[in-house]
Image (cartoon, rainbow, N blue to C red; front, side):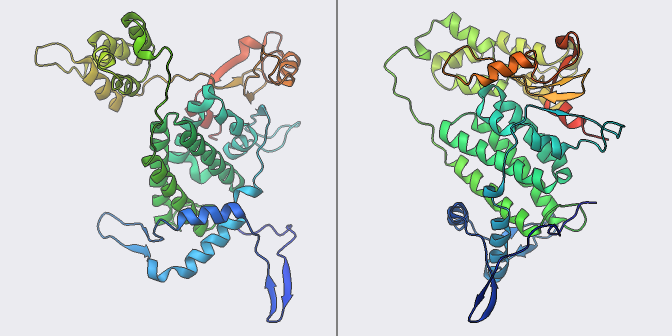
Length: 382
């Protein structure tokens, strides 16, 4: 059972003697003050309603004390006290042995693996976002307090990256929507579910998510001024090849909105047929045939209809890997060819046989297995 209070081994609070008596010192954080200025734009009224009656738990005029307490709890839980692990691998053990005692949890793996740097890698970005989304849907309550801090700090890094680079905001909007829905359910049912941490901290986190959602809603794509070759200057067969390499239907629709030529290419029946054949088996789309007015199969509507019934194939630039021989979960070490890059990763790759972990197998490549986000979570289900 998790320990919900303050650790008895901690040094305790700092106290200062004043004319009115002893007062406890509260830590000061400039970053928190900036965050509070953003939170002040959002009403502190948190409506957590059932389907039958809209019950208002915190009212604006009656929540001054609760607001101050939330700020204090948030101050104790701020990001400045969080440190990220930079390990590349972790041993996954599910039971005690002579050599190892205890077991590895989802929170421990999430803490120790280097997800903070993975967010900055464009090949791993979508993978980390999908993993955070799955945790938000079903595994949020299983995270420890430290893992929760790490989770929201990594989420903060993701939102900052999207706001700066305008990279794939649709994924982040879906993640924040699922996370806010889960938090509303957990806070509304507090006492009925295991919610590690103070309720005020969770309400403060929910308000932060609302700030992020508003920022992404107001996000404006910067128009890039480029006098050189653009996407529209490419010949039709090259543009068509680009569209055929997409594995997400929404990406095809988004690219088709750029120019009339791309829109014409994005509506190609053969393109959507290939996409359906890539993601779904023939038996699956035979059960949900959708015909157009001319009597032909509407493959575009078929794709989005099948997506509601069957999972699509996941495709990522880079993923975590699991070694079946060593039972180690790890990020692969990247070997750089440029001299300007960090050379220690190159030497580390040579030391670890280019596998990313100290493998003892004679042929490590035969033991490696890519780990999908869902498989990552399943590894820690006992």
